[in-house]
Amino acid sequence: DLRNPLHNIFGMANVIQLNSENLTDKQNNYLQKIIDSISRINLMINKILDMKAIESNQLNLQKNPLNLVYLLKQVVDSFREEAQRKNIQLHFSHQ
Image (cartoon, rainbow, N blue to C red; front, top):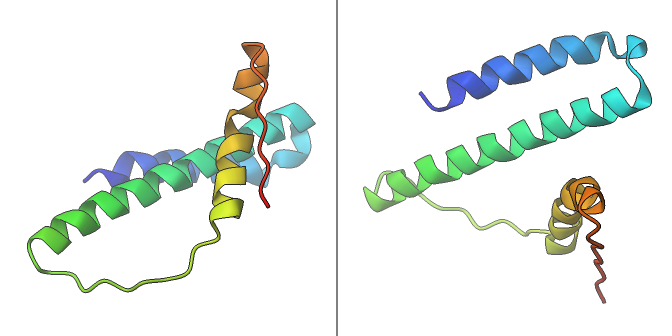
């Protein structure tokens, strides 16, 4: 199962988060990025598995509204620190 390793990492991250008072702000920030990344990867795996179910006509689709601005801001924010290390400036604006 593709999700088992992710669940293990997520579980360990949650254990660390339970003791977050012993972590620095920077460590808490990294821990939150790990948790967010695990959630995104898990969502991607679910979508891949959903596509397989769709292709085999075993899944009914439901359309839901999506806040694209919020999603894009999260993606940009997740790459901001790495971009700064590489002297790359990221700009995000919406109207």
